[in-house]
Image (cartoon, rainbow, N blue to C red; front, side, top):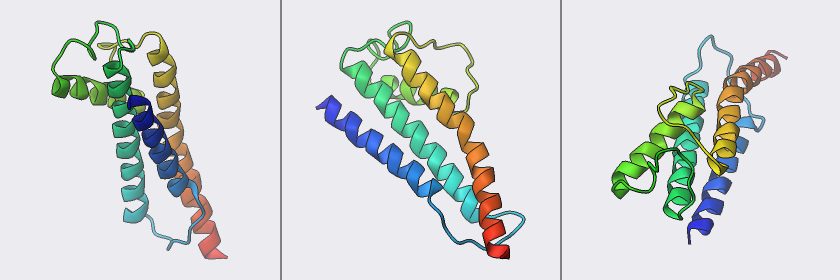
Length: 135
């Protein structure tokens, strides 16, 4: 059951990223609420999606974080730890209070890469759409 949810969440994350990266027509403005809202939505989708992945894998007995934070606490607290860790990793802050181990390292590395690349892709997408509109 957990693996099915993992696949669904991964597909939703990919669909969210595809929606962001697909070509679209936009008006040129110095600041675009559409772009800002889209970027915020993509970040929230990624944060919650990866957080749910950490939570589900932890619930399946896979140790991802040091200190068994996703095993010993009540379900709502484990979900909070998973989403907190996801947000800190996605924003590439890395406070160091929670350390990934095992499979969690690779999942966190992939999430950090997504978080690092999103602002650059947002900027490139914004420039490309503004140039297309100028032509």
